[in-house]
Structures are given as structure tokens and as C-alpha cells.
Image (cartoon, rainbow, N blue to C red; front, side, top):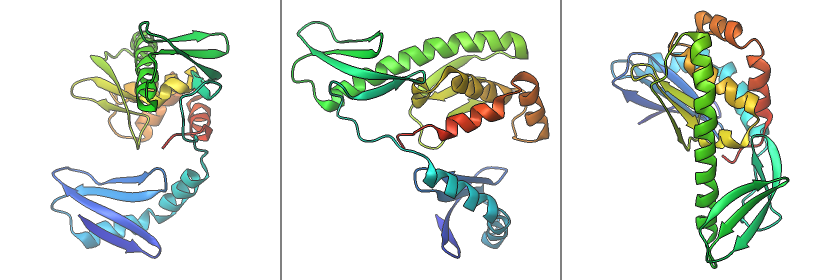
Length: 232
């Protein structure tokens, strides 16, 4: 790995067997990384980074201002979110089967006695994973008809730097597990965004035109998603 210094900004450079340059500003503190083709000279990459300096600083400021969730103890009366709504966690200890239930303003976590914080966290995350998979699958089927595309599969996993991803070749979409906590319109925005990559790989004018056509309010959904607290 190489590193470029642009004043007080350090840029990590990773040379890979790829065709194009990719610039990323990574949460939580705005670390900058550039992935570039193996053949590209470091000085050329430096000039590219300099040309994007304004964009880098803008996204670093935005990232540092974003609210962050506090550490969770997974105990009763603690706040947790599901589909944009705030719930109070209610932990019930028993020797019965573990489960997660939504009841009015509570998320009920049925756990065995002496379950650790990590075990409670895993139980809740698996609930989020299952719910997100079911909800997103229904949304995708609906949008397949509107967009005239076909998604082969949808996966849910933890992601540190993005809300979703799309493998255009395999026609597979992955969604960030954290989306289970966000409002449905934010989830829908990410789904439409990733499905649009089945029509256009790059974030160019054609891609934006598709987004404007399919989801005219996508910019406000994006802004809302970026305002919400993150656990990164």
C-alpha cells in the first residue's frame, strides 16, 4: 500500500487489477482511500486526488457531523429502532425458546438466563436480518416490474462503508444490515439505487436520469438516510 499526503489529508492508495480509479471517504472519521489500476503511476494518482480535494473535504465534514448511536447494553428500557420507529427493549429471561417480538412500543427479547450481551446482540441482529430480507424481497419484486429488470438474489450483511452493493454480472444485490433500523422510504431508495446499477454500472448522467424517472424523490431519501444516526 502507498500513501499520498495532501496537506493534512493522508490518502491510502491500493493498486489492484482493475480498470478504473475508485475514490472512497470511509466512516467513521473520513479516512480517504483510492483504489487504482496496477499500471497507474503514483504521480498520476496524486493529481487525481488533488482534483477531488474539494469533494473529499466536503464528505469528511459531512461524515464527522453525522450522529452516532451510543454503545448498547441490550438491557430493558434501552432504545432500539426498527423501520425508522423507536422501540424500548424488553428483556425476558426464561428457559423457553429464544425469540424476538414486536409489541406496540416494545421489542421483546426472549432470552435464556445469563445470556451475554453478545448473544443478545446476535439474536436481535438475526431478527433484523430476517425481517430485512423478507421486506426487501417484496420491494424488489415490485420494482422488477416497474424497471423491467430481474434480481437473481438479495443478501443482507454488515457493511462499514456503504448501504448496498450490486453485482451486475450475477444480478445480485447486497443490503447493509443497518437498513432494518431505517424508514421504509430509505430502504426503498437503496433498493432502487442498486437495481438501477443493473441498467447502468456507473454513477453518470444516465444513472441519474434513471433514478429521476423511477424515484423522483430519491435525493430527499438520500439526505434523510445520511442525517440518521449510524453505529459506525
